[in-house]
Image 1: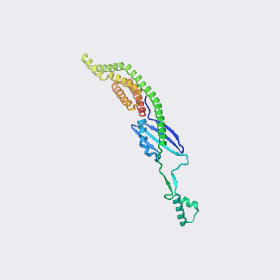
Image 2: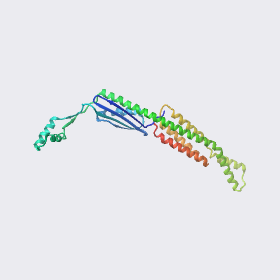
Image 3: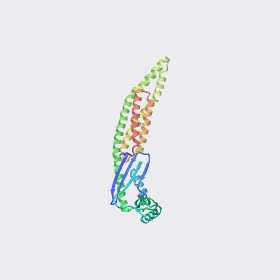
Image 4: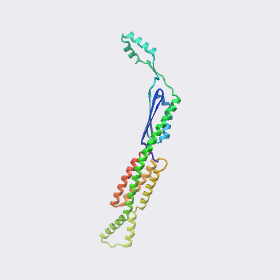
Length: 285
């Protein structure tokens, strides 16, 4: 079953002193293009997070965000009381000001506030990792749901091309007869005596150049193969892209060989349907 590369997943974890929010967004891309945002505390786990995302999402432009909100009394920032008091004492020697104003000045001076570097608690990280997996499962499901919509559209477009091909097949004898009549009429207008046998041989040779039997068969085979690939267990947008290129090649050849306006109109419609398929294939994993 195909998957879209467009997706979104979110998970929230409430810990005793903090709330962790995890968001994963993805759009289409030729390869895995991963961008991560997280507090510096968890940066040492970034490589593990990247490996986990790569194993789950495979391809796409992915934005991963981990937000931390302190909800308890715990803080890693501390006021250095000794330094602040020393600053205030020195400031009083310079200016006779209100204590509150002096405190505002002192707290902004170097080393008045210190930040202790926290170490990651492994039990806490294990819970966060579980939530990351949960968010990835949600975006995976989102991609599957989007894939179902894309699959339905692909089936409709392929069926449209198949119906147009049926019309081409029905029209083909009429087209060949039209080519034969135009050539015969052209020779007759020359008012020259020709060898009928030789003319018939040349006519057959000329008409063979406009024969599209192989193209019709190959195009139908590509259409059938495309539908079969849609039902495969894995999602392979690149493979579907290759098949669509082959479909386009056969459609173009039919158009160049047709030499018949009504058939060329059908070819234009087939090209239009194929372009819509190719456009949506950019979103398939």
